[in-house]
Length: 244
Image (cartoon, rainbow, N blue to C red):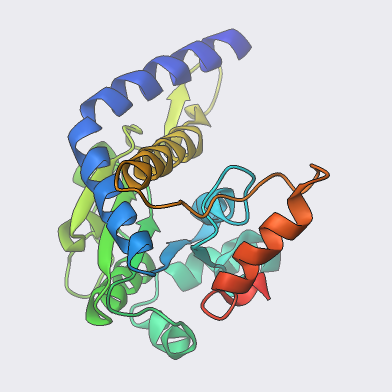
């Protein structure tokens, strides 16, 4: 099962990436344009999806202008069941949206594999209201087979300016066994992280082609990194609270 999972996940990643090439290129174009104009890339997800916001943030080889929206109550460490219940609440974003600094010209990436819960949908709508371009990372197969919990009966993919399909199946798990009580081994995080890092790579290439110096962090464990990284932190810490 170990090798079966790795091989199947790898095959799905390659297939999904190829299918999403056009969408990924547009996403990279938007990110490149946003960064060159001084904007910030906000990234949000609930539950396990929040890991993709952390994946892009303050990362060696990643962009310094990534602003993760990490809310304790919507993550697992404050109570997994409780966080899942909150994610299903309509208008819950009203309780924290005023604390966010999303501006016109920024971008907002929202991750939700099912795409049916109100909080990710409302977060995306709040970003659009603030004037940011929005990208949804979601599963078309999952979303098509599940009912929206949003009061307007919309799903994440319905609301986004751009949708990137992570290719995960309904229920996310990709393996089965005749004696297992349910499918197992989820794949959305693996594919989502790879797609997002690929999009960031493409955006960096586009910045370079425009003659713009992309704000890329060095690994903090390199002896030459501290001064270099500190200059990037100073550049963005007023917009990104977690860089302070």
